[in-house]
Length: 348
Image 1 (cartoon, helix red, strand yellow):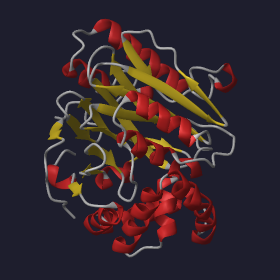
Image 2 (cartoon, rainbow, N blue to C red):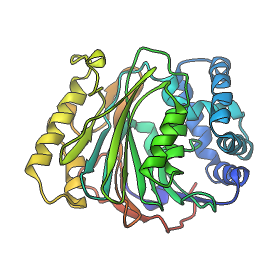
Image 3 (cartoon, rainbow, N blue to C red):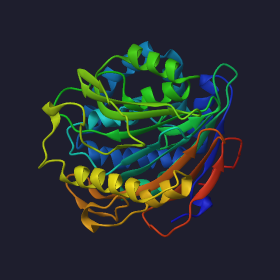
Image 4 (cartoon, helix red, strand yellow):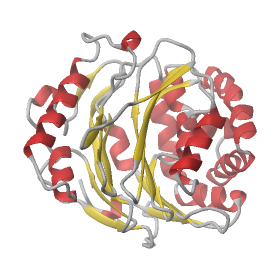
């Protein structure tokens, strides 16, 4: 699937309340579909989901009051209980106990190229949306996200980009949600500011983030609930999949066979293919060797969530300020080019 009509680009402007209202209005139907899908994923009653979401409401507001205003405004415009939107923005923390799925993240050292496959459940593919944020007090942002979620994978006009991997852990994850942290990074002006944002957020999540800038510099940070680890990357190509790489405490090979196979395969591809350009990155993200553990994974049944596979692939040029994205897992399918400056109406 790669029909632009199925991939809305919504531009948000104004203050936090206005941005939330625009988001909720443009993506109202998709947001309601999100609550149905994640309601099943969470495996809890709406009442139980709301009780957990109540914990994250002040956590988010204390971290950034504008983000809470934006979330509340999304809910109002989408005609839905705000606790659902808090729950969606904390969905990774709700699901941290779930075995990790198949995201593969790449950065080419010394280049502005950053990209990943986002692997998740098949029902999310037709819900993916692009959001562009214009603000006077922060860089403009272009991100791929799930409707109702205010931060995910993207880049900004300051030449900063961020990708992430879901990581599994059997510890409480009750800090600032990873999707809120991703948004804060996208609102930053530099790698230094992004590091400051991460420090201010503290611990309390399980994920990996890879942050890069237009100069080709980067850093990679793993979060393990009450701990975090920065990856010592000295390689030409920085790769991360879905297992912890910087702490033996969390390395359980039998549990992460798929992740380790993809990591090793990406390393082999990096050795085989040059130059370090966008075409090479897209080729790596489209690799289908070892069908049950491929980098570009067709949908297959994976308990407990359902049909899991590559929902989309994307690459970002942090100098040019654009993203190339392909929905689904057709390894031969074309990528759609989206510039940070592009405006396209939402399609419902």
